Amino acid sequence: MTNLNINYHNVDFSRHLVLPSNNDSIISQTQNILKDLPSLNIVHNNKLLNQTIQQATHFANGKENFIVFGTGGSNLGSKALINILQGHEKNKIIFHDNIDPINFQNSIDTINLNTTGFIVISKSGSTPETLSQFASIIEIFDQKNNLKALFSNVLIITEDKISPLSQIAHANKCTILKHEKSIGGRYSIFSNVGMIPAIIAGLDVKQIHAGALSVIKDQQGKENYKIAQFFRYQNSHYSLTNSVILTYSDALYYFGKWYLQLWAESLGKDKKGITAIHAVGTTDQHSQLQLYLDGPKDKFFTFITTNHSNQGLKLHNSTMKEHGVNYLVNKTMGDLMQAEQQATMDTFKKNNFAYREINLPIINEFSIGQLMAMSIIETVATCLYFEVDPFDQPAVEQGKKLTKQYLS
Image (cartoon, rainbow, N blue to C red; front, side):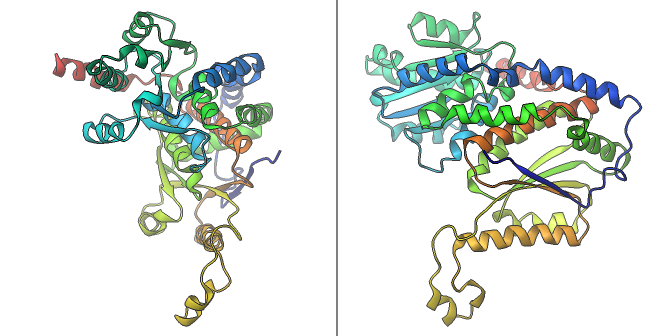
């Protein structure tokens, strides 16, 4: 098992932060919350994980494709996990987290629905986007007088309570798994919400839990809260208002999307917070990097890297030589990726930008479990230093009410 390597640059915690007078109290509060946090404690429950593996394996049997209906935390976490496979999934899984009507219909039209398993995830059981997706499929099968075949291929994850989704499930004898009431959607990655799709895709979910557990066991010392303290002090005393994560692997693209939700919904409250921004290396070096290097100094940067040297296709030497691109002779595409990754960090270092590098020596189930557990712990700790509740999202309720009003 290889641990994440984390290094800070142009950050001197002894100089760049002053601890609040109640620092010991905040650390104690954070440790107590994390110790009892259901979304992390679940990785200790091997019996439950084995049961989830059996449930997923049984549901997957005999099916060719899978569609996951869910939005936000019901979707992004498992999408981030499966994305590390980079197209080498054991089974094809399609995620639908939006309700763009044209894209949705076009996607559905390309799938043999009769050999497809449908996984419908909504903690509340009343998420309108998820209900509309599911209802669209019900309509298609109803038009074919084949509803019985549909509902035998549906697995629903929702809270054990009366809701539109649970009522549909019970009325049509769908397979139902309980969404833990104590685990919020954006924190549900290590529960059946994240694990069921991951198992079907062919990931070793025991290694995902093992990676998370290795981080949880290591989060006991006060040093682990320095970055949360840094974020709060630099935000309140200086101009730190943005936190940029730059992922240098397409395998981590959806980790970036998951992280944005985790951070934004948890921290952005009571006119407080730091805006999380996701940039993709090397792509966004050609779009965002100019702003980061020459714009306002209001950002902290996190580079999430891995080793690309000697990986990928070799470049055609004679073509490179003939056209004067000598620096790419005897190189692979991975060599170029590695050089650009390092060059960008070195540029930040030389220009005195505060940043850290989180290096994953290899991107696999263990390391993605580590990275996601670390992100949860860091987010919760930062919220407590900002004195906001990490687990609610009250501001979005108004929009939900207005949506229903406009449709009535």
